[in-house]
Image 1 (spheres, rainbow, N blue to C red):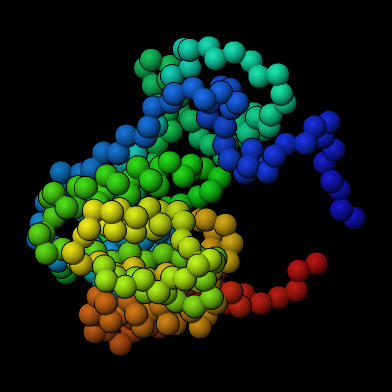
Image 2 (cartoon, rainbow, N blue to C red):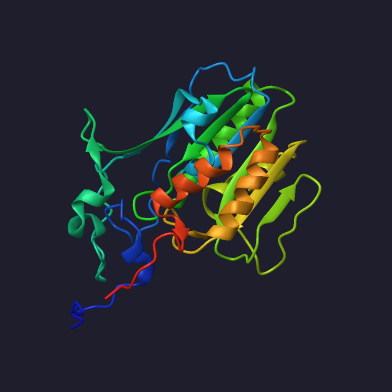
Length: 274
């Protein structure tokens, strides 16, 4: 039997899906932007940078590639509640009240609410990997936009002048793997990409970066919980192996095994849902 919760009011879908971090969500009050703290690690010796999300973690088996964590990118949003913006006359769904453990706010010494995320930077050979863990429940889109802008700016200033940018992501608006470069884009309307990789590609194009490659794989599911078919995963592994010049014969096997364990492969776990 299916039970449906009864509400005395109907909340818009976007309010149910997104955490409300302001006291009055109907107000256009000015809130501070997230602050991105880039590490002081020397990145100029690396020739390639891979910008991707946590869903692509199986593409980079740390033991096989001998990848090591070299730094962290920290993003923090500080919310000052001292200003009273009044009460809304309309009902709204208070996400934090109903799901207090999902957002994870902390308090600083000035009693301001803090929302912080940490993203690791890995390195192997002449390549660095910057991997953002997206989550449509916990992370607002503004985080992806600000992180992408700051990361690209930092790499253009402090990175190798001939740095090769590689962005690997997913989209539920495409049917097969798409490749984008500084000279060509295989996306055709109504195909598009959003999230962190969408922000990264926007920054690379708007800043007229000389050399970059974007790889988009078709997926299903919300941001941070995407799933891909086994055929797409195999093709993605071959592309990544060629782009990063990975010679190991065990690379493909390790990647597929990790993807099956993560449960991000459609068809990897078959069964009947009752």
